[in-house]
Length: 383
Picture 1 (cartoon, rainbow, N blue to C red):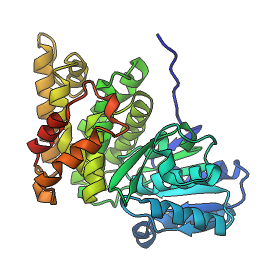
Picture 2 (spheres, helix red, strand yellow; picture 1 turned 30 degrees about the horizontal axis):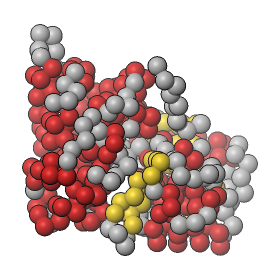
Picture 3 (spheres, rainbow, N blue to C red; picture 1 turned 90 degrees about the vertical axis):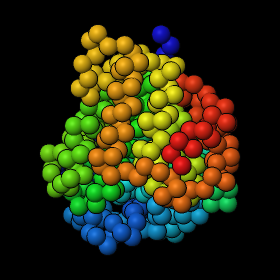
């Protein structure tokens, strides 16, 4: 077997109440001043304030950049770089879901490498390690806090740029379910389905291998068992904690195995229409996997088993059909929309969406490479 490189942050803190233990870990880094990267909602609702209190108690100076957008843009990133420089910060503390995490990664890369963020689109384009990042996650979904991936929207081209860069990996990741209990049901559902997409795409991609399969399958099982509970009752701390473990395991899987066409297509919907990433993934997932199953049907047997299907005596196709229907049922149960037209997507844009999806950094990780017409057909299935 060829050599594998397995990327994971040096320190990963997780579990109920773990935020309270972060201060000494940050002190050990012996850095001067943090740039706290977050958004205005997290400042207003008090979640970011909990992190600021930890920094205050540990006597760690900081400045706050809270202008992160739901789908962060190039301008968003470079404004953050200017703010970091003006405040003489030498490390980052990202507080939030995927958007603050991705913005912090981009700021950290520009701070040590220079240039424009668009130069780093693609795989491992930077020469130097990012500034140190303490990634404090507040949603159970993107896993950006533990991965080498980040996504920034080029507002001029209306394209979500995917960066896969080992130099962007956080130094410390923090996943405390107590930071997630007040998240609304629709956000919980969308981020949870994003996590499921990560795990399933990591399982079916040609880049998968036994280590990534093991963590991805564990994530799938946890998500099917606990996502409906977290959506129904956000204060179910046991379910929230299990979802924390799921996103950590799934993040490790796709971080090292790769993703596929679900993400390649979802990125375009986000870039053109500014739609929630997790919702787009959830809508596309069963239809892309239905096609993938024609090429790697054997991969779906283990997925089916993980979510409770009695696979003994069943064909690979029966297992794949079960998985596809289970994904659709889970999406429906947690309230994911069924049609893109409900979200304002127009058929006239499908050609552009398909063309850009084929250029996406995640596309080569799919079990099969569709034609442009096949991508358009997949979009039409949920239009």
